[in-house]
Image (tube, rainbow, N blue to C red; front, top):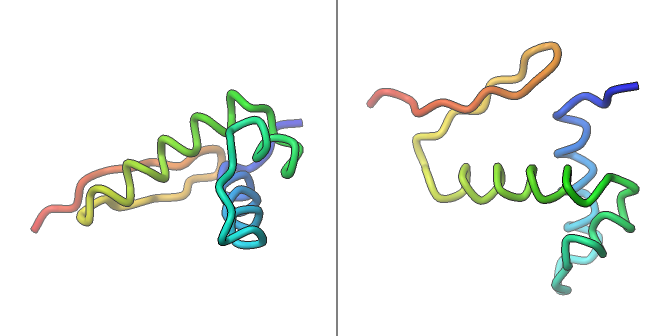
Length: 72
């Protein structure tokens, strides 16, 4: 069964919050969350992109997350 992308993102963020002062490798984060390391890598890239771009808008649909740059 396919997981909701926002649930995946929330699981990753919760794991990072639990160990706030520690560094994680992709494999450690995968073990902590039970999410495949390829999926972790993909979502970490999304998190990095959103943090770098303040105009980034995140839109949740039924089966995915859409990222787009907001007009100013």
